[in-house]
Image (cartoon, rainbow, N blue to C red; front, side, top):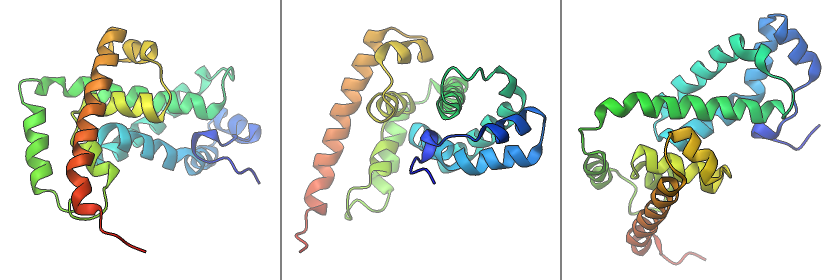
Length: 189
């Protein structure tokens, strides 16, 4: 048994061949292998469990129609990861109609009423306090290893936009950690 998890798991070629023939049990096997990894990535990018679930459903529905475009030039998990990132970024683009709303102010209000600040620092809570684009850039660069060039292409922006947004996001995240640290620094042995 392989110790690989998440997107690094190896998809059995027989399962892939069955899925290409339209075998729904093979699609279920693929979901069992990669569903959690897709959900976790979408959750980190979008900061909302229900939206992440919707993205996973969208990705696996797309997978059924797009599987023939998988060329095998990269591992299947990397290809599926790219589908998940693209679906998440597309969701953020669709939500641009909310541009007139001050997302930072809304997130600050949510953070003020969100429980758990007095407990250990919760990374998901901190990430949710960033704007959706800032969170996506930070997660893609710092956790998923995307380059600024790749992110510029994904977001339709320049590399300097990506670098600037990442720097501001890290600065804000550090400030949030500093603000939360005094209340979570109780000495435990």
